[in-house]
Image 1 (spheres, rainbow, N blue to C red):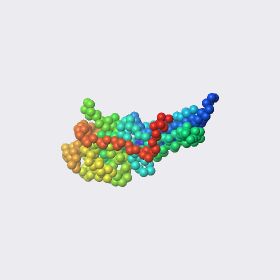
Image 2 (image 1 turned 45 degrees about the vertical axis):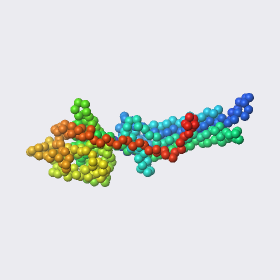
Image 3 (image 1 turned 90 degrees about the vertical axis):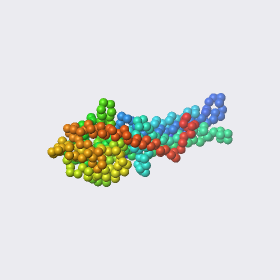
Length: 351
């Protein structure tokens, strides 16, 4: 899954104004009639609900809008430059490459933001005509379009996220409850990219479940797969800690996972959570009956992702948490990233 990209956007250059004079038979001193140049096109980012990754930005790094046409005689203004629309998936965060400033958080289908405005078209000589300057030969060149280097980061939008150590059984659980097919094997870090699955609960309800690569102690400092995928759980509403029930101290495992998440982002510590004690199918005598009902103060549900035992109860418990959550913050309105860029006059907009 491609979830990080660097691109460059360039607004189109404005067209230049024209120097021209009206020359017709029986029309003495026809005067200046040079047209204005057209405005350059803008580069706009648009959320496309059909896109899921930033794959296309691996091959295309530069996006440029069209230049404005030059003015011509007979008061003909140049055509406006063609706008460039760049499609991104929902959940894309746009940052300035140099300052790191967040320019936009695009979460809704159809949401758009102009990130590189085109240059203004230059004025033709008819604009310089005055009562004392009846035959001006002045004109203006087109202005340059704005250019920006941007960083795009994709953060998955999911209702619940599976968090656990490598080989805790997260991928097996996701493949059992949804149509997602993550890689499953008997060695650590088989999951190298996040996966999403739609989980049906009952006849009519559902929620989106995300599986991220396993977390080890020190992941918040970059160990293992570290920070590369931790950002994907920042948008999840419920945390599902998947812990191997065969290990001697599940509470210590949970404390380690919580500590790594809190170090990465303190807000994650306050998210509703539930513990799935997995692999009860390989427990010894007593089986799931000897497992605690809560781990570290968090409700625990024994399950087997392989056989499906207890999975139904877990799904209903997760689904019960989703509706009572505090609504996610509304998308931050994109700041005026073009602040300071000269506004076009109404006269120029009509050109």
